[in-house]
Length: 323
Image 1 (spheres, rainbow, N blue to C red):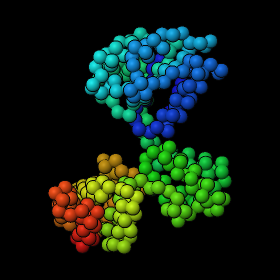
Image 2: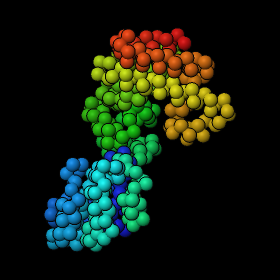
Image 3: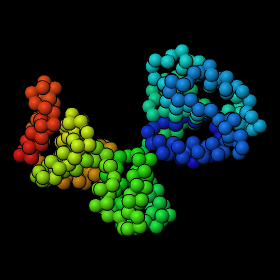
Image 4: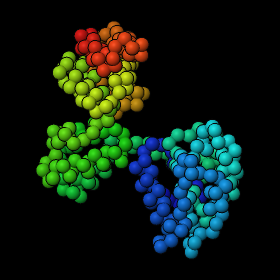
């Protein structure tokens, strides 16, 4: 997101920390005078945020510059629990000094709050969600060009589609991969050896192996997850979630909904939906409903101490393979 004409306040919402950081860097370069950045920049995070102190800093004139900047992260002012501080802050925002640029960085907000409505009416709200595969591919392709990396498109897609929706994480893993390759062509084996895939992606692969009745690979993925200290309960939750998604998709297909419309409704990338549809076609409605019932039984057995969690999830996997 590009900054154009400067505003006095920017509320940054969403979980894409990388894109937020790029925006903040650009804004700082526009606002802060070279040589006096440290004197005219202040940031406060979480428990450090005290409104009276913020106001005091805001009302101090810039040091040998036209403007100053305050960055606030995870203030808590957009949730319940800080009523007095929030009201004081909202009142301050009604008449901020002209020389001040305020950045408020929040992952989650209550859009019903008075503070949010004030900012939306008077200032700029920027939403930073994960921008999607095409955007991230362009970032990686720039790195490939800069470092003269040898990797084909399918391998690059394999890498990206096994990463969480977090640009900073993706770039970090790709940098690690470039260093490991050491000028050799990057292949899938290197990616699997070096990169840490997201838990959701690994569960997707586990369920995919179960659907195709590939018990050996399914258990290999599961045991790798356990060795990596992943919680069996967390794995169970994601297995159940994946089968729930499959059941929903099967109903939507039965109602003749187009795949692209299903992807939009389910908020799934189209490439992922195509893979899930392949798996869905391997099950009947009854089989999917029975598997979800067994997931519920597994959860109860673990919570009631009838069987240890690692072993009970293994039993569930066997039941799914035999469904």
